[in-house]
Length: 414
Figure (cartoon, rainbow, N blue to C red):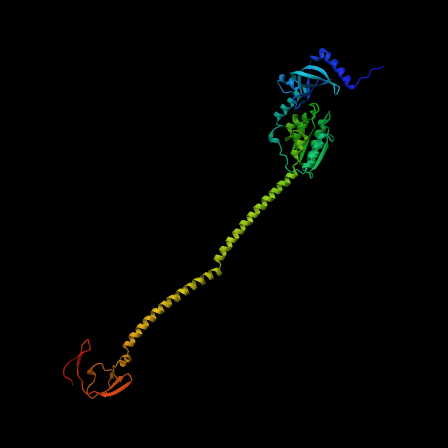
């Protein structure tokens, strides 16, 4: 009866064959590094190859202490280690324990030479770089019509700004005709009139990305009137197109974020601007109202009506003062008048007549003030309080009267 093995048993058996072979357990292999990845665990996964074949390799973190340089694409190296089988996948690979440099790989040497020549020519000059539009209406994309790159760009662009137009030029991004296809895509989108062009593809080995290291691609990017964002491979991948582009994005997803504005953020910013504008306008309106109130008060203070009211009040005050002054003056005058009247009453003839005095007038009606104004025989009129008496002068006698009113004989009478 035939013996039947399980897959695991067979892989284990083959692994034992590799382990038991001394030559495969201590072997040196020369080749060019490709598809190198540093894992977060500290392991390094890479491939070494030559013109005819490739070999998968891994260096575990525990063996990296002797590695004095960073493993990168295109390096020519000599790897010392052992060949064994990875049982889960049934694949054999080289488990590296030491890695040493062995010159520069052909592709890497070609890359450096082209980079140096184009840099000296000014293709990479910052003076030639164009600014990426902040709010584009249409974004062109030069990449394969299938694959993760275009899907990532579409997804991110749709999320950030669903109103933006995406224009795809389906180019070949790997292989013999890739460079020509990429150049045609750049030129076509430049003539179409998009605002920004994204040129790129997903990750891969240096050979897979080599189309973006072609001189004609770099010159097409340099001559493009539309701003170009390069988005080739992963963040660690660097191509000639990255140096020639106006802006380099580490991945196609990052390129979409750089080219397409977040419309939600724009709306939030506009809302903030609206709030700020409302506050500024409210402040201006409030300040304007305060100015209006101040001007209104000034106008009211300067208005003819207010001036008339103030003059009326002033006139009323003056009138009151004048009345008080007139009243005071009149009171004083009345008092003086009363005094004068009293004095006049004391000096009036009637008052003297009522006191027993009499007024004597001559025949001619003249008031007699002296005995020299009459002569014996003259008819006199004697006026008393209640009437007149007609009398005749019989005798004249001169009398000197002193200040006390007493008479002194002045001499003989007539």
